[in-house]
Length: 284
Image (cartoon, rainbow, N blue to C red; front, side, top):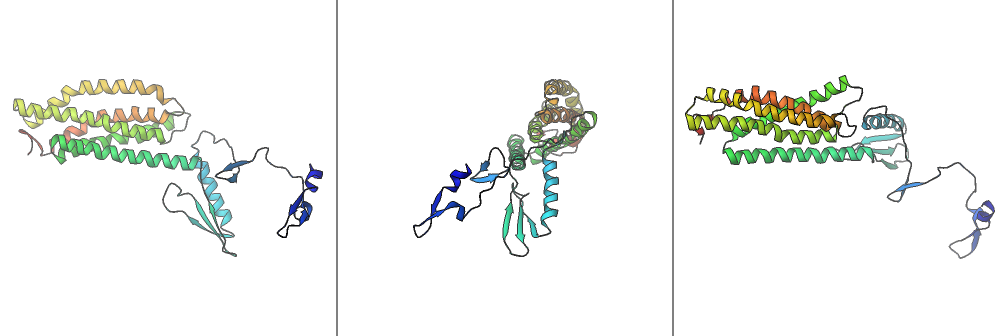
């Protein structure tokens, strides 16, 4: 191969043939068996085991080490808030030459997923609120239902913390956990709707006192709420041990348990303190 390379000639700007050995040095060096490219740029793949932790944390540690290393010869600046927020802008202190250290791959996919699911969660929240306002014609009643949903989401955080302590597998808030957040908004809202609708129907149709109507509605609807919760928990138990969908399973189990307690303990208190719920039904 070396002899073939030496025999090659190149044409210069004047049209003359120049031996390849005049412009390059041919040396035998070690290289990767395959050369990887992305967007027509040469890349190097680094593969490492993360010892049962999220892939994001080792990347953050590597980024901190790079910032410390490059700060000797470069002015290091962080990128603005975006899905490329972990990129680093490097400016050579001597020459002023600028470089961009871009974090792609696992980091980019993780940030994109959290951004999209976060937007979906907000959209679901706004949509549920406006649907409740249209149905009840009351902002306060809709607020009571959504406050109960928010309190239920605390159970998801606690559930991940408990799962991290009692199991060998490390549990983090993952993309599937956010899917559980979105699902729980509907589950917990449904529980509150059962109580509000039944209590208002008792006051409107039977003329029952507000406190008594809320107590009867809570006692009557407790059984279907708990049976629904048991069904969700049993169905989600199979997901809790899955390495990919474990976050979704833990989120649904812990969030559903929290939703039951919130619906039967906190929502009745909020209903009793809401003037929109009175003996005549809807407060027009």
